[in-house]
Length: 141
Image (cartoon, rainbow, N blue to C red; front, top):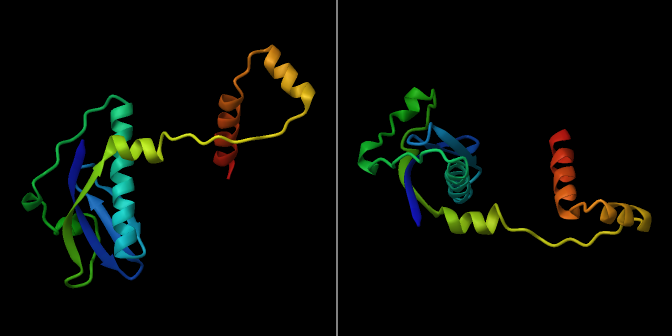
């Protein structure tokens, strides 16, 4: 199912900032307008997917006509003249999540025989352990 939300785009010296007023002022950015739109789709999909996975209520989208670019003033954003606009951002959250958040990849790895045997004896799930170890390692950096 397609989810469509209005977003405020602001051009500044670093590229474009994107704000979703309906989603607790969720924001992202990109160096170019194209990158900002891609990031907006990813941001919207990730936010709505997380709400759904956590069993939280998904906010209704406002009518685009009800969103005003003056939202920038509330966020202390000072866009350059004529460089702010409102656009709809759409994404099929379920399909996006399957392709980007939930898709697994197969990896081949090598471990010593003794370690393999010990893990098999204890019915250890190799994929689960590797996933946990990688997440832990990434959090360290």
